[in-house]
Length: 626
Image (tube, rainbow, N blue to C red; front, side, top):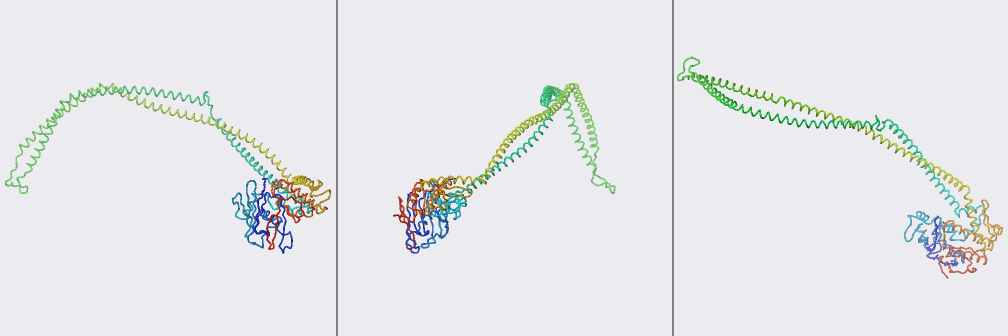
């Protein structure tokens, strides 16, 4: 609970009850005696109705929206402007300045200013809710119990039957509220613990579920692990197989290296043989060209002569054919045609026959030369074939060997690839094996951590259940017994204060405030409160009221610099009044005490101020310090 230390500064009233516009300083006023003078003939009174109580009711109205008597309506001054009524209260809470301005008219409203900043809500309801957060527990009953003491609380409390006083005291000290608050906190704590318990239980179930999953996974990994051969170097092991395959690859690589060396050597030898072959062939072809040179010249000459004869024969045949085509006899009548003589082509034909005879001779000579050339070429080729047969055989043998080497290399490369593939498969198996080992180790670690977490959560569940059991017992205690314990403590503390104050007022501690089952009894010198005189009752009312003020201030952590004593000296003699004044003077936490009385002239009071609330004939009250 937060300590609220109220330091009241001033209160302003505008058209509130019998006042028009007044302002009263509330801070550091010491003892201020307040008396009333009523000059309004309508009231037919001297002091009553002047507005003394209304002046301080404005404080309660500003804080709570109602007066000390619980009045919240009809507070407007009908003699001024009832359509404009408000009260403004200025006070400090710690280092924060509050200004509450509560309107009754033109419409109910509440303005809250804190340190010069408007903190009001959108309407009076929202502003009231905000005020209750700034100043919790500050209601009219509390104001009447701590700040304004007088006409209300003592009579309401002491005049109740003893059986009803317990309920009133519980309400005043907020026992029900405190018990309910404790129950609420305990039940909230219970729900938090239950929520935490459910969370732990859910987590425990989840852990068990996860453990089952990981255990199944572990079994699967281990079963798969058993399918693999061992990876040592013993015969049959994968490492052993890998080594064999690596040796096989090493053998293949050596064979390829040997193959490459042989291939290179054969290639060099073949190149030498081809070079030698080309050299011999080139030399032989040179010799052949020498032999064929004269023959080819004769062949070329004969070819030219034959072509010339053929040309002459074609020309002569064409000429003879042309001459033979001339006709000197009419084909119809058979008579000779005049002036036409048919040429004689006998000589031309003889020449033609001679040319054809020469052509035959040239053809024969050409064929002879051609045959001679072919014979020379054939003899030359035969000679070359005989001379290069062994060399060509070696070349063919080397070429064939090179092809075989190429095939062997391809085969070896293929075997290497196949072997490497086998090795890769074995490596994959090995990697899978190693991964299984890693996975198994990882799953075992996870299961170990889950087991540890499960143990921790089991411990937490045990602790939470233990706490829940304690909270449940406390809830049961709060429901059944704590109310009485709490109220008994309050009454015991209240009784100590009452005895202390009784000693100051009555010079005796024989004033008892006791809890008797469901009743609160008040006795003075073994006499019930109901049997006491009016003066005794009045003093006891004030003692109880001041004691209640101290209890409430301490229990609710609310302090105030202001105390208003409204008509508390009725039915008391001068000695009793002075005793009460001495008691009030001993309250060290108050710097402004306003004492309202109809009998101020009878009070022997050392005062700091005297305030007169004067009501004029027109019904308007004013303030006057004398």
